[in-house]
Length: 488
Image (tube, rainbow, N blue to C red; front, side, top):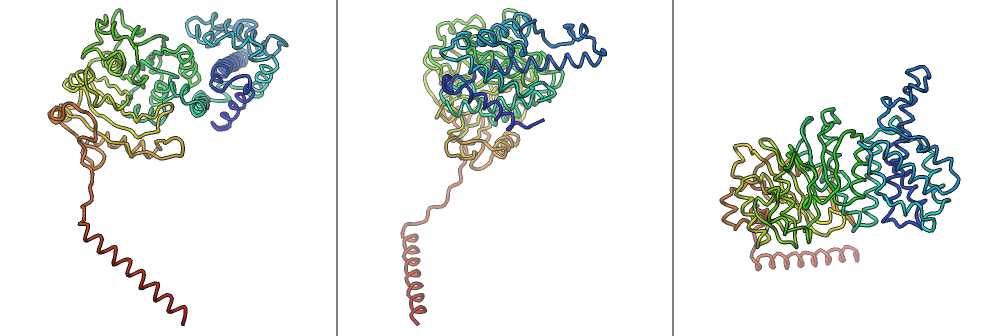
């Protein structure tokens, strides 16, 4: 069994086969479904072999539905496609569609969202290119015994990151840097049996990290929920969760702000942990409907239709369960100080005493945006000692600088996490403030307005100038002495 880097190289070589007729922006539209198709076929074969071994070679027993996680109809297996000699794109589309129809409760709608036209347009992708791709993927088995789900998922996420590196504006829409995700999940600390919800789940990274955090406990089954507006990204989230070993989750496709799909009866469903990195400052998000929202999500007001940040925050607050629920949301720093309706909503949010911590992050950490983000931690029932208080953290200098894109190293994540755990005043980094102090600053939530920063004593100009001139004179004398020694 080989490591993540080796598997990533294998998958990236599949992308290189497509390079030319397919732009790198669209690699995921091809690699994602065909990788998923290959993985399903190989896992099915593993299950068949296990049943044959158990039954002493009984093929009828091995084909029973209860021996498999999903059904692969006749003619829809990877081997069937590999045996085709022409119209391979149409054959792949037909096989994936057949698998969907045979598994309506788990796979329906996951593969068909990837445009059939792209696969069947031979001007765009010839049979010979598809043949090369099929043969390349056929050189390795991708079952659970070959690659565990977390290794397969990790390699796939590295591939997503590569798409984000190569195409920041598009791929960055659905890729949140993993160290940031790890930090937020560590702070929320979901426990097995608790529910986790991401209303803007993108490729599912935050939900996957939650499953990892709970060590794939059986109690995770049925406790993972998400919604994603983009049809392709919603499908990627489902595949990504599957590739990471999650077997029972609920990811819905749709516009969360206009039409939330995760409901309990006619109400917004409630969750123990709510986490998201929604699209920043979304325009035309649906302010008119929100002003009379039938779900009652406009608890503090209706933001401007030119910026939906506080709509996301209020939706997430409405999704928090009573008692021990908590929430983490990544936002642009503008939400901390913007005026007008945002300012009025922010004031009500502060007075609700749900905010536990506010953390500003450094620049160039996120793909596709030059903005320096922040994140808010809200808790339905804060510990008594944190009541009417908010931890302000300035983590803008806690990062590892790289040439093109800064990162949070493991040590950086630990540093920020420890500041949260300590929940105390640390010069240059953090300060615990009261709601009265925030009110006195007109409900501005920017940590740099509150934190005490170390400042060097300013020395008199004449004193510094005198020392400078004395140093120059000392250098001249040293040069003269050096010259004398050489000449003698």
